[in-house]
Amino acid sequence: MRKTLLVVLAAGASFLSAAPAWAHHAFAAEFDLDQPFKFKGTVTKMEWINPHAWIHVDVVGDDGKVTPWMIEAAAPNALLRRGWNKNSLPKGTEIIVEGYRAKDGANRGNGNIITFTDGRKLFVGSSAGDRGAPSK
Amino acid sequence: MRHLVCISALGVMAAMAFGQAPSGETKPAPATKSWNQPKTPWGDPDLQGTWTGDDCIGTPLQRPVKFGDRLYLTEQELAEREANREKTEHSDLEQVVAPGQAATIGGPEHWMERSRRPCKQTSLIVDPRDGRLPDILPEAKTRHVGAGAIVSDPKADSWEDFDYYIRCITRGVVGSILPVIYGNGQQIVQGKGFVTILQEMVHEARVIPLDGRPHAGPNIRSFMGDARGHWEGNTLVVETTNFVGNTTGVNGNGGGTPTSDALTLTERYTRTGPNEMRYELTVDDPKTFVRPYKVLLPLTEEPGYRNYEYACHEGNYGMFNSLSGARAKEKKAAAAAAAAKN
Image (cartoon, rainbow over all chains, first blue to last red; front, top):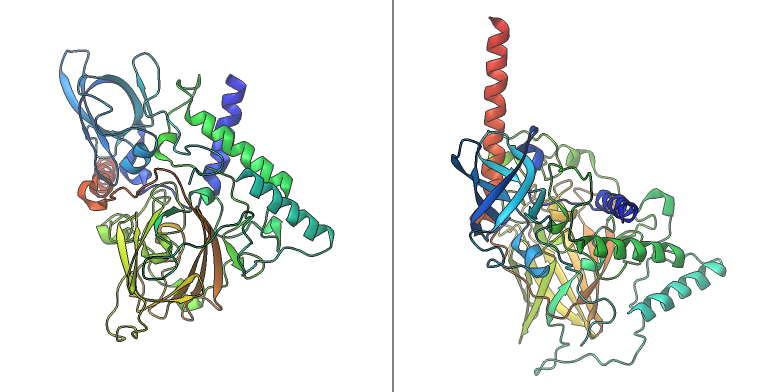
């Protein structure tokens, strides 16, 4: 399983390097490589907007203080085609988020790895749909 | 569809065996099953539906030099591409994170849409024969290029430092159809005397009159130009002029060297099957490229695939965050410089 995944990740990386265009905006302009984070948060709302959806979470610190964060997710177009919609992540869901914090130090980050508390990834799904001949 | 891929690949192999390199063909390949071009009630060829170039996501615009003049993959290369595609599809369905996987600064796999079949082409450019962009004229190289998404540390004094896509203005005509990692829908709607193409990202609608009226005058310009269409048999031919120069380029997402006000695009849309369309594009900008070049992009219609609104700027936090990040970086540098002085 691990070997397969490594192969897949390598294939994915080379696939990506061949792609001529990345997403809408420059991550290195927004997020800071020197400020990685990983925390558990409770979803308060999902902003289903373009160019990217944003997940709002409340994060409880060690001192019990609750801090709201915004986590950047995919474009709704991509999520919809994977079978997710604006109601798929209900308020109150606990998620674990790993990414990098905004350069200006605000409570915003990219959601590079997002899982439920049981370890399952969010937004799993295939946008490729049925392989083989289209059904028309 | 897999049947069609195998036949095409074998055809390529046969051609190569006889010493003929497959060329960037300009005639549509014959359909392998009998299919009649449907017509609209008023008798025009019916091209309606929502089409996408998703299958060529990841296929480069410019051909890697190792392929030389070869437009099509060999059967083995195609099989490798399909194997990678399948691996990616399986990876997308993995429920748990790989052990030891580290977070990166970009977006993860769920940001991306995927091809459903392997693209047969080594590049999207088919002419010149080497599949590479023609040389760019010296003056064109001096034009300001707004920072796109892959620039690692862009100047960000103002929104004007970013490209027209990041600013949520437009990706231009070509940038709105070349497939990228999501949002590749092209919805064609026809009426008597008109074809309209609604391009998913950044939801531009191109209204194309077919009645032979002349283009708008030279002082009337648009980021998407001014289009005029006519039928040649079952092929819709669209000529677009009257572009505003120095805005978008003609690479993916409208990147690359910004084109000039002399740009003319000629597109040919030919439906080749119930769910397949052949899209040929000629880019001619005598103020930017030393010669015109051609792109060939297969489009497909997929069950259930619809354009979704890409109301780009409504939530353009990325722009705000990029500018805010740059200001924070400046403050930090200024504070460090002041501290170093003392």
